[in-house]
Image (cartoon, rainbow, N blue to C red):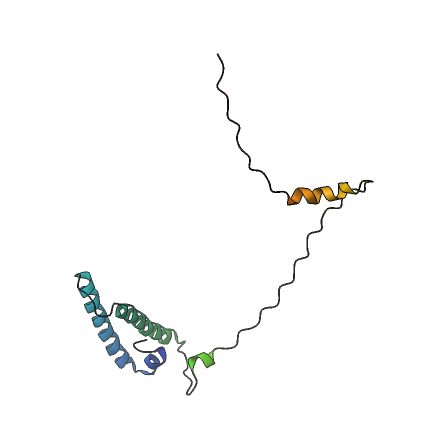
Length: 135
């Protein structure tokens, strides 16, 4: 649950925003001091909410400073304002690797031999123990 939403912050006058921001900072510093002294806080999640809300105030101030203030639309939800995502083109399937052709031979079993080797599990390599030199 947000303390104050971004569209509500944008509707406030600059003086009102500055006043609310100072109140939020005072509350945050009070909670942080209580936490630092080892006291228990009634709602520890409130610290996180305060930090996020303060960041929202700073964001709106910076947007106005840069002249990129967002335009609020009446009666529409923020989700409806987002443009529809463009669909990504389907990825082309990779062609299967062509198996190397076996040389033509008279024996039918020769062509099946490479396939048989692939299906066998590989044995683990172990190092042979070195024998101590005999004197």
